[in-house]
Length: 180
Image (tube, rainbow, N blue to C red; front, side, top):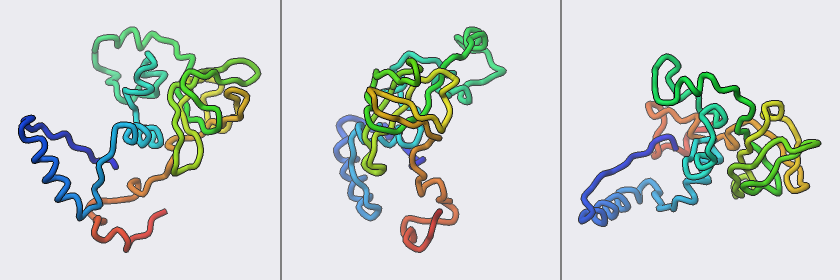
């Protein structure tokens, strides 16, 4: 979901706090998951993940993160970024053959896969590819390792959480509401 919290507790109390959260969370079907599942959720929901695409040494322009930067503020790298000519952009792709580092082809190489995972919910591979601007739009069929891949609009999933309004909906009444 959109809500996340970091709790800072003394190491000596971490187990106690975790146990209290687990007990309170039983009424909300709380489960413990690992970072691998959080990374998959971030990928499926087009949420920037510093552990995957963030490791690709790309600028905020290529990562489609310009909206996070102040256009009228001075910060380290602002002038270099403003002068940069963008030639590639990270784009959502689906299809077999997705693996990090694989080349993406049209009639010639047009990009590289920077993140990929199998989505059990979608039943297919999803990923992010750094593509030449000409190809960095939804609707193209390209190839990775000879397999077809499609460029698609993000996010991959249309989550129920996009329609939940905390002032109107609650976990206790979640089955009483229908969503798109």
